[in-house]
Picture 1 (tube, one colour):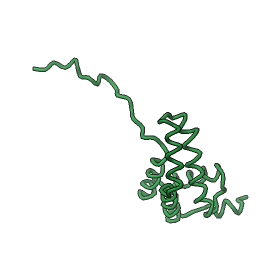
Picture 2 (cartoon, one colour):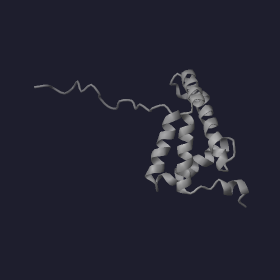
Picture 3 (cartoon, helix red, strand yellow):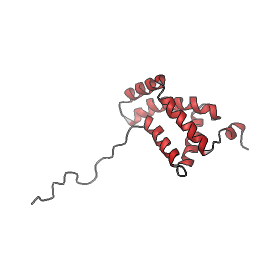
Picture 4 (cartoon, one colour):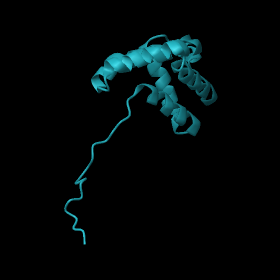
Amino acid sequence: MASASAQSAALSAEQAKVVLAEVIQAFSAPENAVRMDEARDNACNDMGKMLQFVLPVATQIQQEVIKAYGFSCDGEGVLKFARLVKSYEAQDPEIASLSGKLKALFLPPMTLPPHGPASGGSVAAS
């Protein structure tokens, strides 16, 4: 039941590394860097706005690269590529590292709120 496009989109771990590196490189192309900067400026570090402005631009940049490797040029193709990469992350530290770099390009850094008494004011100094 596998379609021809699904079969051509099956990448080995080594191929996945190459494609990930190309996707990351595409984000540093001047025109894409400008597009991402504009999207981030519009999002103002708001997670909801990041989904509205940044994610679509990041998806388009990825689509341009992965379509050459048999993935469909739509959101589904990007999701299939992401699932493929995820499946290799546990087996290959280099893929995990590249995947982390890619995510860092379009996801804001997560800051965790402080837990418990952060001030330590109840501790007596002697």
